[in-house]
Length: 75
Image 1: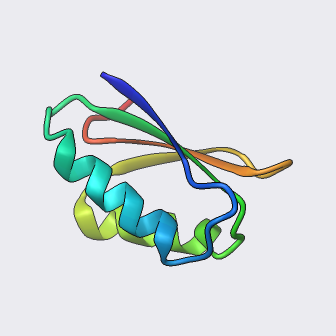
Image 2 (image 1 turned 45 degrees about the horizontal axis):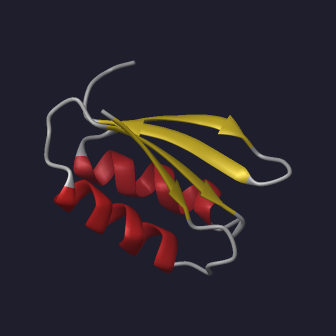
Image 3 (image 1 turned 180 degrees about the horizontal axis):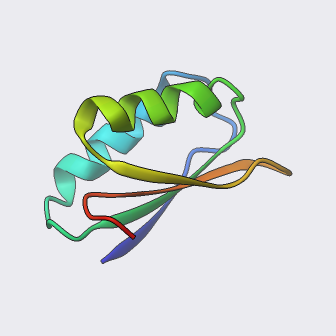
């Protein structure tokens, strides 16, 4: 299952809060979330959150907005 989570325009910690809520609502073991954000704090916050939660992540792009791929399984 793949989900796109658009948090562009939201300041931290809102993108992380929305990501946490999305993960809770989609508890399937193979969920992949692509999160888009514009707050540059996310470049540190998203990887820190993923490490804390045991999630895999990949930075897809930094311009014109930041985009991460996040999942519960390696991709």
